[in-house]
Image (cartoon, helix red, strand yellow):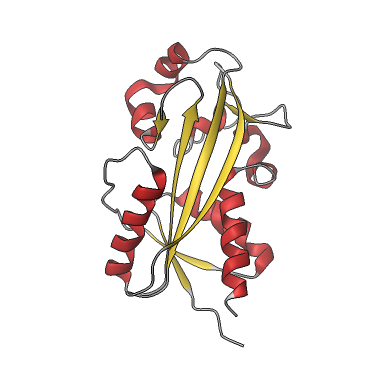
Length: 190
């Protein structure tokens, strides 16, 4: 039986690191977060961006790495805000976003986790999607690093991700779906 290699989670977002760590706990997999700012290429496709980031992360860390990239997509807008979600919020804030969306507008989050285990290994991608609707009011505790959690209600619930908390959110969310796919793959490597 092969022994699992420790994995470094490269992210500068502490909330993201916490959520990924919590989602991996039931699988007995732990990751060591490492705050490294990675260059983000400008592309509309999250898979392209996360693949570039994991290659860059591996070159810097020289050990198995895991990188996450996520975007929220407003249905009716072509790829928006998508990979530019953070920048859209930083530029528009809630007030500006509320001018773009209608109450109950459909949206979805899409996350990719990328794993790279060696210099010669191709990155392995794990995708998770969560569909829901948008609010034009902020609900739940403030999440400065994940502001869309305050205005997004996943299908099957009546509360925003922020109101659900980490445990409640993980029943539905995109990142947890990608993490579970990664965990099954990773444990299968034993």
